[in-house]
Length: 292
Image (cartoon, rainbow, N blue to C red; front, side, top):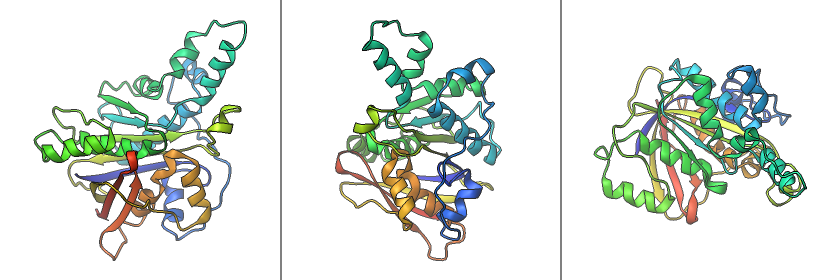
């Protein structure tokens, strides 16, 4: 499958926004690990802002940044939200209450516990009625989300149906059939769990990224990408040890090798840049990135 990347947003420790992250990922500036500072969050009405946790804020922040960077209205773009686990703090609170004597769970906690909560709040924040998909594939959630977003750009007749079916078998992701949109927003996010969940599912730092993928090249295109499914493949790694540790610590940060390739795509003299991202069931997604 082929697609174009029109805009990118990042939010994580030492990677606060694409303008700051791009030179670091391109290797022209040192990476300085630091606590993530969440930007001022006013996308939701005050009542909803008080109810949402960090995962929703991460997802909406990078999603709106990516669309703002591209100058695309947020109410018209289909979205794919992908996370390995959703809001662990809310899950901890619900489990804690169920283990006690007062087992009455508030409706707010319940609706914030579902995996598509960020998608719902995205609709509230943007007024969007475009389609939205929420995925979870453990440590391979970013790969699953990327496969889904790329697949949504194409209608069933735009690519070889046998190839799409084979990709579906390999990844466990089903791209929706029907009229293909011009662009799709991919949002990947993961945040740490509280104890005792953190002891069995450690995620050290929050991280989120968003990619606006398009079917056609345009004036805003940053890079052209080609995606293939492989049965085997070693994942691309980050050269900086601290960035590599971040990649391993946070499932959404499995995107870092792709983001690094995109950071230098326009200035690359070497032609295409190859990136491999581990996917489900021992498979891998192989990407070729060329200047836009």
